[in-house]
Image 1 (tube, rainbow, N blue to C red):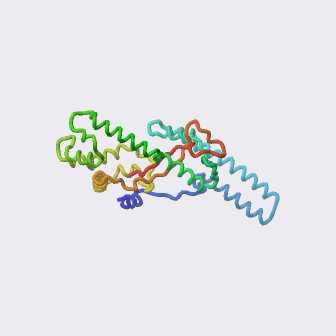
Image 2 (cartoon, one colour):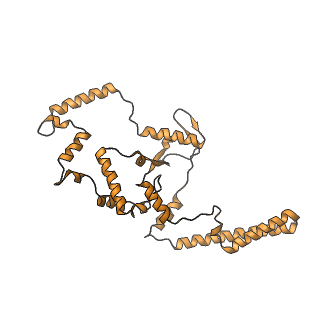
Image 3 (cartoon, rainbow, N blue to C red):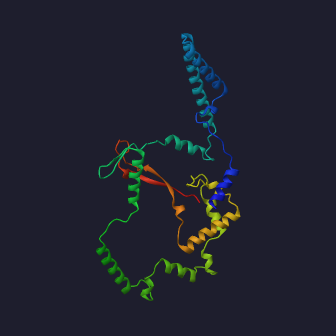
Length: 282
C-alpha cells in the first residue's frame, strides 16, 4: 500500500529542480551585470590592466547593491501578502522568533566527550533510550509488595461477586469485550470501519511533517476508497493480532533544548534536551 501511494505521488505531484545558487530568483538586469563582471574578470586575468580591475570593483559594488535592493523588495512584498487567516502570519513570526542552537559537543555523566557528529548522535541516542527503560529495582521487594496487594484484593474486593474477577489480563479483557460488546450488535463492531478511519484522517493536520515514507497529510486526505478499505483491514488486523507494525514505529528524533537549560556552553549534557518525534504519518 505504501508503494502504491508513493508511485501515485510521483505521477500526480509536480516537481521542479531548485537551483542551489538561487540564480533564477534574481532579476534579469542583475544576471546581466554578473555576466559582464565575469567577462571583465576573464579579461583581467589575460591583460592585468588596472582599468579593468577598477571596472570589476565597480561592477561588484553595483551587483551587491542591486541584490540587496532586490531582497528588500521581495521581503517587502512578502510582508504585504501576510494574512492571519491562511496561517502565513504565524509561520513568519515562528521563523523570526526561532533561534537555531547547534549542538557543538556533548558530555555524559561518565565524563566522555563527543565532538564528531556520529559521536554526538550515538551519545544522544543512548541518553534518550534510557528515558523509556524501567529502572533497576529490588525484585525481592517488588515480589513482596505484589503478594501483599494481591492478598489484600482477594480479601477485600471492591465490588460484589467472586474475587477471581479481579485477576485478569489483556487477553481476558479482549475476549470479554468480544463476547460482551458495550453496545447492541455484532462483536465485530468493536473494530473500526472506513468511515471512522477517514474521519480521523480528515481531522489530522495537513501540514504535519511526513514520516520516513514521505507521505504527506494532504495525500492521506485524498486517498481513494479502495486504499481506505485496505488501511482499515490493516488497522483491524492490528486489533485482532494485538501487534503494531514495526515500520509504523519508526520516527525522526529531533533534540530540542529544554526550557531553562543552559545550552550556550561548549560542553552540554544530553539531558538538557528533550525529544520531539516525527512518527510515521500513515
